[in-house]
Image 1 (cartoon, rainbow, N blue to C red):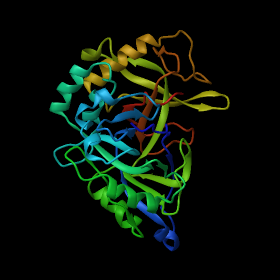
Image 2 (cartoon, rainbow, N blue to C red):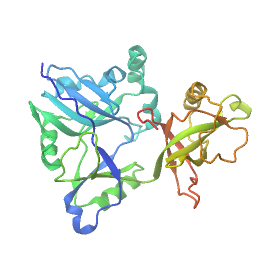
Image 3 (tube, rainbow, N blue to C red):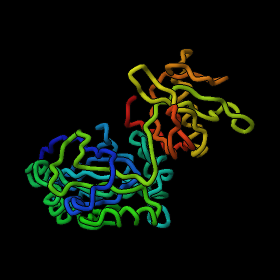
Image 4 (cartoon, helix red, strand yellow):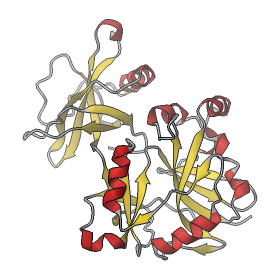
Length: 314
């Protein structure tokens, strides 16, 4: 069995569409709302999945195990795990119960039959004993399309060059998250947030640190009605406002348990926000928040909870 190199995922930087004069230099791929994974395929029919943090998440997605039998390894590939809705669009709410089940294989298998995962494979960094990280994206794409055949639980996304504006409009029409633009001549930079990959979302997002919460009322008594958000700043944790919409009942209950564990008597924000009745927590949890714009004071307008980010540290 081949010994495969451990490779950290390359990360995209937020940015705008390229000017029309350089559009031909970029490949455009759909941005998928899921869980990033590096798949290690030693060539013996097995597969090892690691999350962005490096954790082994193979047992959480048993339906993806057949990939090892379909790919002529040894190989290391990069991709995103998603769960699709009835229209074939990624639905993070359906994926979320699948995450974190590596230690509960029986439950993972049960959920796999109810909401099967799909792996979108968009890069290959090692193949047949050779590192491909120094090869350009366009060349790696050629290797990838030959390596990974279409399967029941995996696919290689389309990449279009020279038409990024049309591609972005298409993602808006189909209510998808956005695009990732990749320089056709770019190398793969493990662990680097590179300007050679540009992510363009159809909405604004921020990875915010949770510093406290406000109790809910009525049927939400005992549960968080809203969480208080902050953003690291040179002076400390700067208050961004609160969010109380976008949760499922399961997410709210799960978050209540995490907030109870992180309970603290000290306000982590600098300066403290004028919020009555707040319960403070240690600033350990990170959440991805969607919002419309920011006020002049930096507060989020129309924030909506999107997901907890256990793969990120404050």
